[in-house]
Length: 138
Image (cartoon, rainbow, N blue to C red; front, top):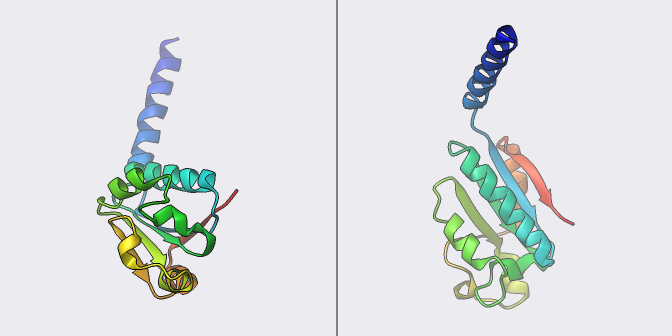
């Protein structure tokens, strides 16, 4: 019994050391869905990862049908998004072309949401820079 306890403790310490040495990552999240469930799920994912890996970087790019996610008067995740946007390792970007297409001013965005000229191009640039990619969908 003592031998099993020592082995278990050693394994636990080893796994904690490996976990603590996880190198920082950079991940871009792609959100195009207009479904609130997808918005809530995406926020959970980025929140958990940003808290678990504070030395890593996370960016969520929103465009197309997902615009409601970042609009002050329509978002079901506005409070969570605004709080997460204050973290140094999290950024939220919306496609300016999508805003223009729907004739939405940047003043309609939740505080902390920035713009990029083209959401798809932003994701491609991040991937070229070595960022991981996660598509948030149903």
